[in-house]
Amino acid sequence: MNPLAAQLNQNIQTGNEHVYQMLSLLGKEIYFPKEGILSQSAEAGKLAKKYNATIGIATEGNGPMHLEVIQEKLSAYNPKDLYPYAPPAGKPELRSVWRDKMLKENPSLAGKSYGQPVVTNALTHGLSIVADLFTDEGDAVIYPDKNWENYELTFGIRRHGRLVNFPLFTEDQRFNSEGLRDALLAQKEYGKAIVVLNFPNNPTGYTPGVEEGKAIVAAIQEAAEAGINVVVVTDDAYFGLFFEDSLHESLFGQLAGLHPRILPVKIDGATKEEFVWGFRVGFITFASEHQDVLSALEQKTLGIIRATISSGPHPSQTFVLDALKSTDFEQQKKEKFQIMKGRANKVKALLDSGKYGDVWSYYPFNSGYFMCLKLNGLSAERLRTHLLEQYGVGTIALGEYDLRIAFSCIEEEYLEDLYDIVYRGAQDLLNT
Image 1 (cartoon, rainbow, N blue to C red):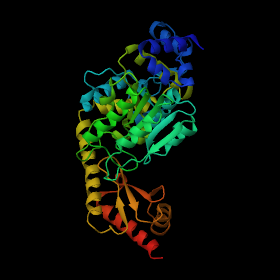
Image 2: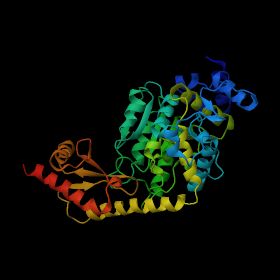
Image 3: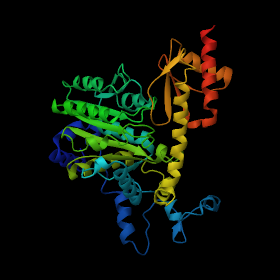
């Protein structure tokens, strides 16, 4: 094992032996090089005042070489903030500003010990880092039966984790914290589990209420007290889009510092929150009571980044940072929030109107981009195909009877027509 990896492991073991036990084999072996091209380039950047012949970019006129056909479209930005490589951890100021934003929007983090967010190439990349660091073959990865299908690829196919699902909802349509508890306690003989919490949930658009949140945290704490090491990933992709009386904070804040056997990891980003999907700017943040553990986990995260994408895109980090610092940011975001909330409320009013009750019911939704219909005895895939071929309407079939509809991408004035068409398509199939 590389001495740098061994030292990071020692730092984690000294700070929290349980976190060391959570690491995968790759997680134990990975490290960020302290010597080599990056470190020598960084040293030269500080000391090479005459000539710096270390960096792998081309320069011209005391700045990065670039093409005018590109720069003329980006003339509001200094070339130095666009063309050179961003640091593997991301632009330092962006990381700092995002951390401040996290604290402002999650008051439960006040006084808690958590690290500086590391920039990822959006949220999928952050989740894959978690999978690499903590998932070995056969490790239990626990998440609800209503989920984003990429979890299977990220934790199951890539890392051979053992996927454990539980029903998202109870019979009274609340979050099934008892199901989560049972799935966790079933891992006692293994001593380890990875839990993925995604709120607002994709595909249902559901965020638990305050009491449900407490029950989720209690279930995880009970597992830790039973001797299970739990990596808890809060996938906060749609954070902030809370339209009703639900949790308005990430559970990351409640989980931070809760128990030595619980390692909270927050995955979030500008992608969905700031409506910049193609910018691919996300973040990964760890919580621990021990600074040495936080530092070592960050170094291992940088090792994964260096070994895969090297660093994230610089221009989009600059764009996001510039937006976050703008005096117009909050107001513009509020305006977009109101549009999204109006669409969600319109959908709920339509579904509660009684027009469609004989064909479907719907899962609870109060946040995010989506909602999910529960079809009454009608194949979701059959309806999806029929809507696409006969009406030119696209939806997503999930499982046997669930149909996901993204109200996020339909103007409010067209939502009634959309649901009328879905209803008509369902009737076509039921009457044949």
